[in-house]
Structures are given as structure tokens and as C-alpha cells.
Length: 162
Image 1 (cartoon, rainbow, N blue to C red):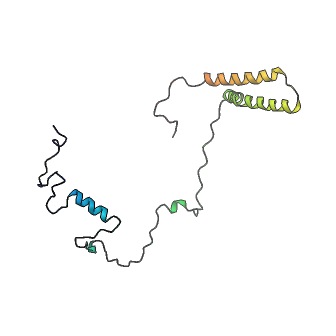
Image 2 (cartoon, rainbow, N blue to C red):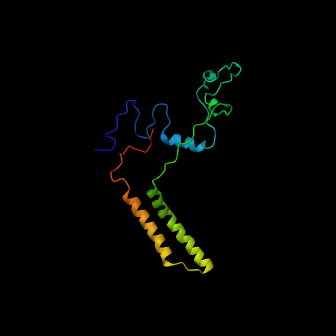
Image 3 (cartoon, rainbow, N blue to C red):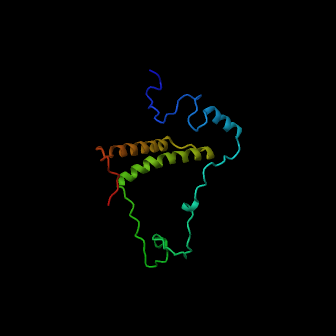
């Protein structure tokens, strides 16, 4: 079985052989030679030029109509009576939770400040101060972990409330 057995048969009567020219068409070799000889030249149109009547339109001069943008009024600042709504209040944590966040975020900052002060002034702080800051960090971290909700959230819940 050859590669051409599965192709549809040519019903135009043209031969697949390149050496046998079809009716009115030059062979592939002649067509190639013509392309090479005329390389860079503009091809001559053998057919009649296409009528441009389809593409040319008679344009009537019409005065432009001002169209108003429906969104233009939305950005105007001339509405003197408009008062924007107040922003929603910030959530207030419980005192224990606030203290835990201060321990988790404030203790490392305080340790960095103490390191800088120690380097600049050559003053050494008591180990009780450093121990207290480490305890505040660990205590706040453990409290925040223990008070996290244990049940999983709904997969479609993005936290927004109406």
C-alpha cells in the first residue's frame, strides 16, 4: 500500500506526474522557472481589474452629533449635596488577644532596639529583660495558636459580611 492510496482521487483529470502538463497550466518546472526569472518584478494581472464600485461609498456630509457619555456624570464633583458614607469601624480585639499580638510583634522589635542600644552605649541589659521579651513572644504565639478556630472554613466563604 503506498502513501497515495488513502488520498482522494483527482476528478479533474489532471495527472499527478509533474512532467505531464495539465491543460492550460504550465508544468511545475516551467512555473518555477517563471518565478525565478521574474523575482522582484510586480506580477502582471491577466484578468480584468476588479471593480472598485463595491468598496467605494458616497459619503454624505453629516454634522456630528454630540453623544453624552452615560458614565460622565458618575465622575463629576459638582454634586455638592453628596456625603460619602463613613468607613466601617475597625474590628476591636479582646484585651488578651491584643496583648498576645503585642508580644508576638513587639518583643522582636524590642530585642532589636536593645541590641542597637547595647552596641552604641556599651551598656549590657539584665538577662531578665531578654528572658521576659522571649517569654512574651512565645506566650503570645502560643495563645494565638490555641485560640485559632479548629473547624475548617467553608470552601466558598471568602469572609465578606453583608
